Length: 490
Image (cartoon, rainbow, N blue to C red; front, side):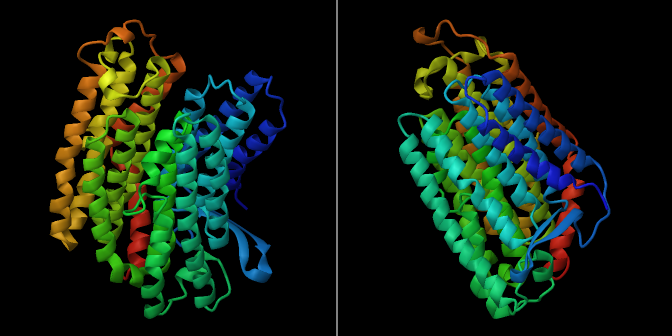
């Protein structure tokens, strides 16, 4: 029996969350130390899992299975493939970075870091689940902590609105997805939530065509799919920095991952039937999101709408249903997760020192915080898809995959490259260069902890851009398994 790596990974932040709730708020140093230790363990173990090998069973590694409620076909069943392993690493990177950038939280640090650890456990559980009930359990575990963290520690001007809007949208998507999950349970005739068993069940074509859009779009609401995207920028802007990093960097990938794992993998013929719709919605996401980002004056809203645009590329890669598109989607989820986490981290550093996110009131910040400017520029280059950075190696396969099935999608969505370059370059020039406003004539540089976050996330994006095989080889294994479910290489 192999060591339960995934269980340790998932339950480390859960245990830390419970321990933190038992401590008094006056022990702030101990609270931060526990949160940092737990997040470091998550990062270390997720990195170890990414780089070590394990016997592969049905395309999955590190499998653990224990009967949970056998009378209903529910089990504790975890395992990861080449598609989900990079997402575990992404979650570890963002969790560790989120704790570091939140180090100076003074208001109820016990609750803040405890709720943050619950969020981390939630995403790790979704990425590892091979049981539908368990996946949905972890999917919903994040709803309450997300809402509380936004309304308690978020932006005073928008936290009530942003928190409630996010929660209602995600509840709507969850209810729709849950109906689809029940349909899978009863429609298969197996009375099981075991995803591997459901993969092999061979559900009827008519069933797949009816239920695919319900399941896919229900989960994809969390990925910001059009027209259910508006919760994302409002939620990101209202949230405290660490939660913005986790929401945009990891939680949106949770929605996309669940849509892939359940919608496409369990209903492959339904995915082929409805691929045109996902291509259309993804293309709208890409172009419309980029146009909305360009129109914003609030720095955080720019990044929020940019995330909607870039997640559209993930949807296009999924809907291409071929090797290039799916590979690019996997790379894009990792690249965008790291990129947007660094974007929001830098915006938080800027706001902490200037007390404004209005682009028109900022300028010349590179003189005071050069490493923060470096991190924002690196993220901007990734966002623009510049060669040598992770965004380039992620976007090119998506466009190649889209061209093979619908050239118009590749042509139209490529317009977003120009729009993205325009708003990123404008923001960089206005915020970090040019004249320094009189009100910002004396600013402090970012802390050492912040510099560590900037350097770590920047180096990851550069490394993937220069050595894409670090990520792509594993993702290709996961893609090949999906292509087999779709009926062979497409």
